[in-house]
Length: 587
Image (cartoon, rainbow, N blue to C red; front, side, top):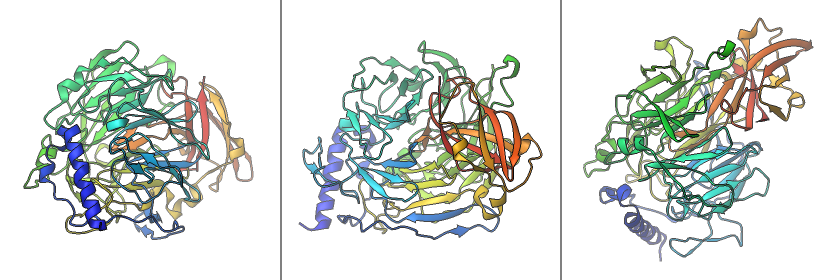
């Protein structure tokens, strides 16, 4: 049988099964216009290294570098482990990937009952770019994740046999997934996961799930769910409340946002504490797929003399409420994405949304907190919504958002990319402060061939984006942490020191120096789960000798501010961050 016929039959059988199991998501598939050719892809050649195709913006807008031509697996989900490895993985029902599993490690697809010898997950060394295939048993399609206290990735949900699964991946050289296919009480597809101050994980929402539950201990099964009326109130004919935005606040409550509404949920009592005003303009959650971040928390400015710590949430982009329906219709109408951002101080007694406007509209993008307490927005499209073939006009321009800048001057447009990153793209902040940019597969199988029926093919190239603070003219400002000086772990509230070198000479004051602590998110579908950045309380700094300095800071005072686990810690001088060191925070 020819490769074209094989791939076409695979696509047809896949869609038939999908439509019978998940009729809502696929009820518009008859209007899809699939690619004219779906070649059966071959295993990749030996991995390329050292590729350099950097594009510089002469105005200091950052630069791009192609680091690998073939990632092997499309990066639908992306996370950075504490051993400086990147892990990205796809669904297990999208057919052959570009990376075979090692001999003797094939899996049996529980849906088709056929042998599958292709990797659907990859671990990549951030220093060498060497890759190790990971064996995924249950389907991880559109799942969630977070880190536990020991830096293990605890990951849940998915589609089909993965809907009830809980998986654990430990950061070691030969570790693979440890899967419990019956860990969750109900199937969770497009749900959000948040680590809590006591170390538990809450998982909220998902396809047709108007509730939440708590992940069970390893190897056990959960049987209890809790209704969440917000999800029932915000669903519509295309749902638009999937992958809800969830942020842990310093009082232990959760800010939960779905579609255009939000609440404060107490996970200890399972009570809704507060309802926030509606954020007008359109839908912000999947498939409208806007962006949300808990803005950096400065522990130098807040919490003094018993005063509460104010926390702000930023929500940007999204799509009109009917964007997904129109994008999937026979005549293919791609509505313009939203340009508006809402910013709210969720810890105030009577908070209100303050609206700002991005330079360009964006749906399906990524939002990352940078080590210098700025915010990066990248990837996605200017029109349409999340979904197969539902997006148009890629947004190639990253945007920098400066939270402390004047209200009308906070956005800066950066050097544009050359590779479209549409549906199923991802990104992550790396220990060297650059940004790993990966993924994009807005089609229901692997097809790397650009053509009239496939304007945005499966993207397996990996890039690094270097934010403006990495421009060469900032090299003189960049501090370097002496890694041997960093503690391996600190307790809550403990004062600790970091030694670092600086080529700028004596500091002029604390305004030029700060230490930030960052937890890397689980990134998928425009959601950066569990992402948070703290500016640690400065205790002082001193000159040691030569170009060496020592800074003293306080660890976060409580697990509500920083759940126990591993964090990237940076020294930032004049807005330019050092490489990170990993430090564990615990009781």
